Length: 229
Image (cartoon, rainbow, N blue to C red; front, side, top):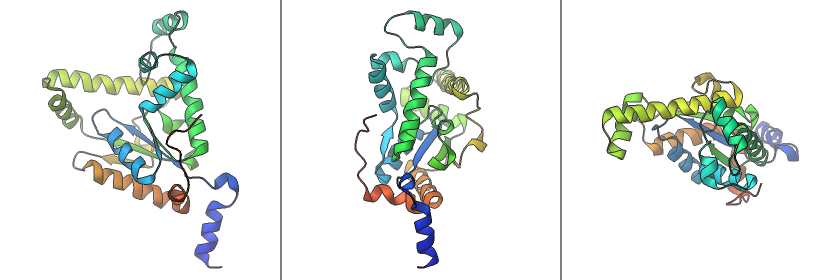
């Protein structure tokens, strides 16, 4: 047996190891992270989990998706939490975070998923995921949003900065961490001068470089279009 064969056997030894790892994609608002995640999922043959997480958690909690969407990636203050917990047909931020943590953990155990945002990189063991952060200078993100939404620069800046603050607060309430700290990620991609295709290729190359044969398991296995958790 060659050294390469021995290494390959070592990478996949034991049934518990024989599944593809996942990719988590944290992103600044307007940096293109969700679209890049979609490209990565399509090329790897993985299931994309973005708004799909909201729909899944809504079903688990027996709530309307728009109710769950109201707490998704949003930090809540104490008064909002008290009101949500006391009203029928609502969900508290703490309950949502609990369901999210459980769902992300199950996805990591099954493998073959690309999870967008929601602090997912903090919810799975390092050995089960390539943790990616997609960033872009604030000015460029403001310009992109202003052009896409046809609003002036001042309104765009308020909206983009507000979304960043909401996501940062959500991650801090979820796990007490700073989601913008580059040291929490395996790869940070700056899309200021990169196309979404080029950014996705960087992520895919990093995934295969880190996980080797495990990163190719999904190409030879059946990853269902919807994971029934």
